[in-house]
Image (cartoon, rainbow, N blue to C red; front, side, top):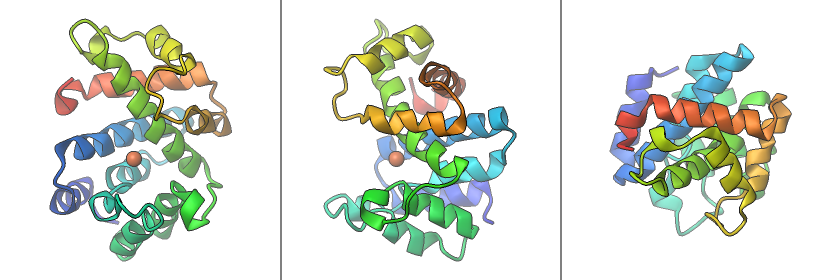
Amino acid sequence: MISREEAIAMVEDNVKNKNLRKHMLAVAAILKRLAAELGEDEEQWELLGIVHDIDYEETQDDPERHASVSADMLEDKVPEELVRGVKSHNHEHTGVEPNSLMEHALIAADAASGLVIATALVMPNRKLEEARPESVIKKFGDSSFAKNIDRDRILHCKELGLSKDEFLKLSLEALQNIHDELGL
Ligand SMILES: [Fe+2]
């Protein structure tokens, strides 16, 4: 398995958009936190987050290929379960349905990272530290807020044995821990 640094270097080679790179780091931070919470492999879960959208710039106009192209890029670099995990986060197109804790966690973290960041951006100083778990929970329930974020994907957290509120709290804490890297 490639190291965290090698994975980040690979992302930097393939993803020019800084916000997209930050998104991948955000998802990775949530996954690492979840793995710690659930007694799973923190290194592996974090790596999945770091690489999960590595093909995005190539496939953004072609969602049917999203994740399959990543899988090809990653095939000989990461363990098979991570390749499968990447594919299952676009299961609607790859046909690879999520069936492990890590796979459900990626789907939930992918969407939750967007909700947490959108919540931070409407705080008075646009900072993660200003957001409270209750702020994120409230925004989850406000269907007119950040409409493009699919709440049903966040609810994959239930497959991890976590309630929505617990999961959003953990996600917020994970992103607050890397606020410098995210610039928020
Ligand atoms: Fe993503």
